[in-house]
Amino acid sequence: MKTIGTFLKESRLKKRYSLIKVENATRIKKEFIEAVEDENWKALPEFPVVVGFVKNIAQFLDLGERSTVALLRRDYPPKNLPINPKPDVGQKFSWNPKLTFITGISIVILAVVTYLGFQYAKFLAPPSLEVAEPTDGQVVSKRSVTVSGKTDGEATVRVNNQPIVTDDDGKFTIQIQIYEGTTEITVKATSRSGKETVVKRMIKPEL
View 1 (cartoon, rainbow, N blue to C red):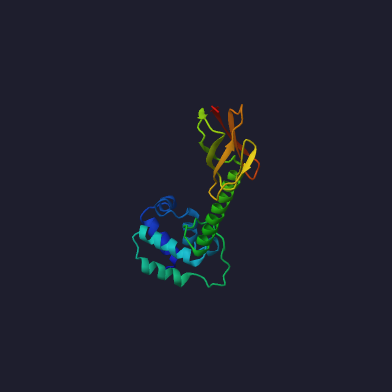
View 2: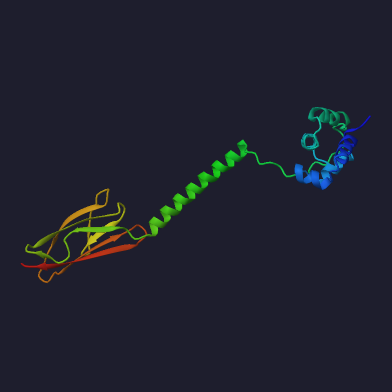
């Protein structure tokens, strides 16, 4: 009565196939094919993997897959026989819940780090500052001039070194007294980190 190893080896030799040829066709290492033919179970991986080997070899040799696997099940040793637990077999990648969890956590961490980095860079950057009034070179015929504009919501603003109040959106409007010889309006916005943005407007008093 032929065993699984003898059956596979004789079938291979009958077709004049070398171990290398079977290896190239089935993508199973030559050493594993030879171990199956020699029924050297200690040199092979766990039983489910060996079943896969035998199926591929049977298909390549045009053998009955079911009958060949039946021979394997008959001749395969009991489970308590020491089998190499970690063979050098390439395993297919499979997605699993653990990988999903790890990927989700990684995405959350990346998003948090990116957000914190953005906020930190924003904290260190000078505040934005737009001055709508007065325009540069504006002629002023009164004793006061309107200064208005917009900056970041958390920045403080000084006009000609005079602190002014901004609203929640960073908008501001103030009337500045003009004295004889005043030719420049300086608007300075300061962030919480101490960074400053300065805008100067030249005016032409005609009092």
